[in-house]
Image (cartoon, rainbow, N blue to C red; front, side, top):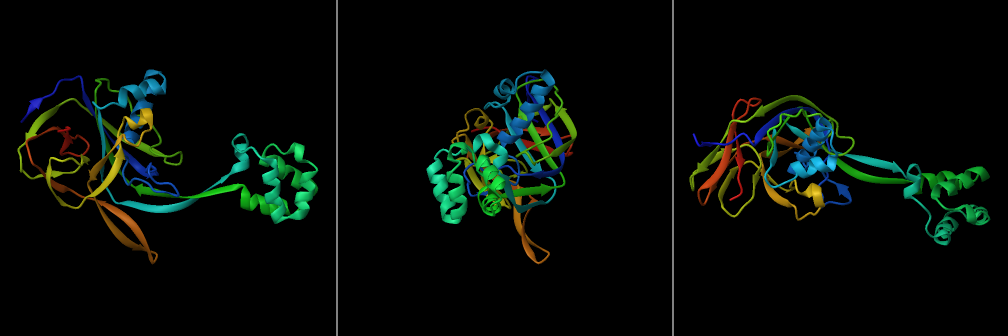
Length: 310
């Protein structure tokens, strides 16, 4: 048994279910790919939201408490994670303030190429064309068929977005406060990513341990990829994940390559190939003695290792 830590820090652990989420990887663009498990920044934001609601403080103030290098956030898969794609469509005229016509002549030239009659009609009302919603209104008033084609081809933005589904997921955090605040967040990811917090536990008994150099240990949580890792064995995936400090400045430099306890497989579902991740445990050894925190999870019934930066 190692050195017991003080009570100025606490481990908060929770079970989320069901989890249908999309957490966009910051470095992707056309296809909004998702992390299979939430990065530290996403979990930190969920905790900060819960704390702000509980304390009745501003969310930005809570972020400064939770988004710092002293805290560590991670997830552990408890069941299969299925990845699927959807097409999101946005009606731009519902966001009228964000869709003004900045150059009416160029906009009319586009209309002229598609429908000369609509161009001739709109030219008479050029002074009314401030937003694309105005254009549609005029075309509708005039009963021109171009209104419908323009609505279908110009008023929608479409994007592929990837979503992950898993029945149950464990999240944990070692945070630099000693208050047992309730977890009240209902989203983890984009606005469609609703989750339910089904169980929460608070642990103040955790210990600092030293992993001897070259000793091989089992790891079932997040592990930052660092130069002192001597060997990695077993099933795992590596993702570049955003750290809690990413919430404060949104700089992609606030990220690190992370070893995740998942095995990627391809399953046949309705004669289609589906991307699935299953929970795994990988083995790791370090080139020098390495300090870690260890605690006994009340939700998992086993020890969990939290890495400390070398």
